Length: 225
Image (cartoon, rainbow, N blue to C red):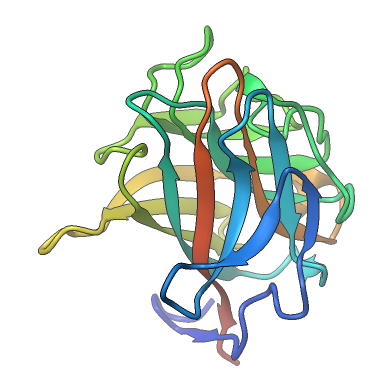
């Protein structure tokens, strides 16, 4: 594998060509900016949305993805979002509420950013890795070092295919904030998902509490030759 940081960014984000949008997911522009925004849920009850790159990725190869997430509504909100790699297809959409939009997408690996404590969750502000479309069972989980609800935050997910490592970093958008490693999961994406080629993207949901849940500045990088 190449040395750390030896990744070449794609010239365009993976939603150009357009994403496959499902459920409540929509694509819009940030106010006063030319940045495209993936809105997974728009503040309604019992919503579920998903957005997938229309171009499959090679799950046997390393990649790194970065994005900014902004989950907000009133004083409290639910339920959260997930970055997901899956083999079901670009129309995949899971359950609302605690399903985080990926419950039932069986051939999948999900990284949760969960803002509501359902019964199996460690807290209402945690990250987790879950397999096989089951958000009730975490392979690994961690309390987030920064608030996931209310203010935007940045995420970097790095997959090392040679060493079967999935690492998840977060960073607050406050001056002087530093990136922190939250999850370090051993997993082979291709073996766990059951295919060498799949789709990557995002899911999100609401339940009896709501939130507007946006993703923007999404890029995917691949190892340099």
